Amino acid sequence: MYSVIRSFRHTSRLHANLKKYLSSDATERVPIITSQSIQQYEDDLEQQFKQMLRDDARSVLEPLPDTQSVEMHPNTRPAFNFAAYVNKSETLQKLVQLGVDLHKLEKRKGIPQFLLQLDFERDMKHHLMFLAEVGVDPGQLGEFITRNPLIFKEDLGNMEVRINYLESKRFVPEQITRIVAKNPFWLMISTRRIDRRLGFFQKTFQLVGDEVRSLTAKQPRVITYNLEHIRKSTFSIKEEMGFDQSEMKALLLSKPKLWMINQDKLLHRFDYVHRRMQVPHQEILRTPEILESRDHRIKQRHGFLKFLGKAQYDPQKDLYISLKSLVEGTDEEFATITAKSNMQCYESYLKTL
Image (spheres, rainbow, N blue to C red):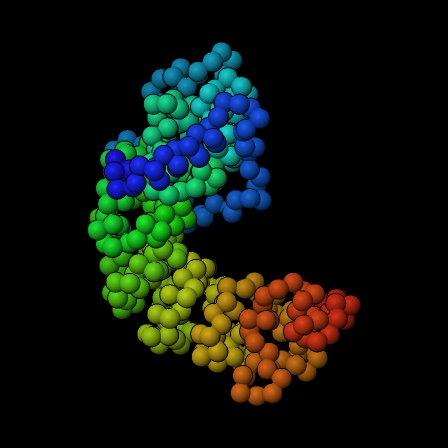
């Protein structure tokens, strides 16, 4: 197991922390996390993973050969509502203790049947220990499983191979922990696929080894993202927005999330900032956060500054307004600190739109 590369003291501490989360004492149970505490499922990653499942000879999402095998207790039916099962199923009780959002999982086709087949000691405990040994905090396991409950179908040996691959590519333990924690699907993707993806990014963006590792750890989802989407985003940023190769590389390393945004929305946002606000490429590169901000926030705040005669984004001129101050902070902070006005005036302006 992967734990052989960890110190005994470190592993024991991780196991102790995990054990606390799995206590049978009801007073120690962690409540089911709310919908606000987890980001919306990434539709593209979900679709990609479903395609991987289709490639399998037999998917866990296929109908069970024996429907009786999922009826662990009397009065259970194929139409699932986890609330009726929690008091009868130790497995579900353990998931609740970990903070898994069962309400989300019961909406996903095939997942309730899959989970009700599992025995905690036999099918789940060692996977959870593996994640803890890799460095995933016990407090994050609930979110991890909510996003990818199918981790329990993955062979532990394959998961170990994928960790060993990252080590062979000189990813440090902190980077490996972040990769696994931030992308719960990573451990289900073969090393061959990952190697091809890392090679694609290295070649396309002319990255050196340290840059590949930094990018992967910073935003591991971008590595496993839909490749056609990545190619289209690359074309749009380079050819339609006009960033050259080195500028595009800088954007990727600072804000890789830009490559996962809808291309039309990203291009529309860039056009507004570059053409309407007259912000040059170099200033956008200095503050790439502007391209991640919501359109209405940019337009409302720029419009207010223009109304006040303060829409000046050239750092070489007086009364310079930084793009960072334009998109960050609350509306009140923007109105009083950046625009040097007040919230009442800003609200009055918004009512005119």
